Figure 1 (cartoon, one colour):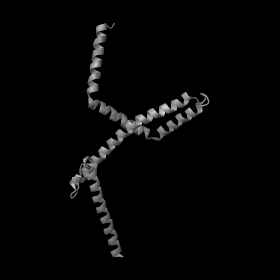
Figure 2 (cartoon, rainbow, N blue to C red; figure 1 turned 90 degrees about the vertical axis):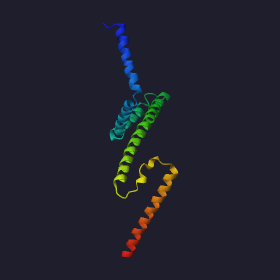
Figure 3 (cartoon, rainbow, N blue to C red; figure 1 turned 135 degrees about the vertical axis):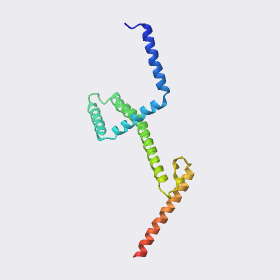
Figure 4 (spheres, rainbow, N blue to C red; figure 1 turned 180 degrees about the horizontal axis):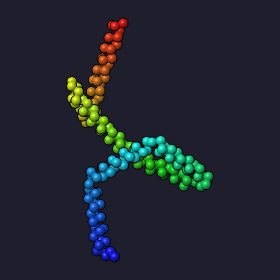
Length: 157
């Protein structure tokens, strides 16, 4: 038989573990990251769409059973609002992670290519005005390169 003191000790250990986990940011970030990746992967599959369509069909079919009541409408409105609200965070997290990974890959390519402009590394950290100036500069370079190609084609013909 468990004594009251044993139960208090056990509860105290559990509470201590929960406090440690709550403070452990890395633990919770890893949990959310895993949840978000799995959630985004699953929600982007045809099966998820089919399940959603079936749920909507069931909701529509049950309309006459509930007399198309306010509660019947509130069920679908509440469910879709909650799901949409939560999916915004899941999708945004996944998109941020993918963007960060892509940025690291691009930075490595710029760094590894001889003659590349290393000033372009870490562009995502500069101010909007500076980024716009660089965008205009590289748009001009691209325009000049296209004009050179057109000029070469016309001189060959």
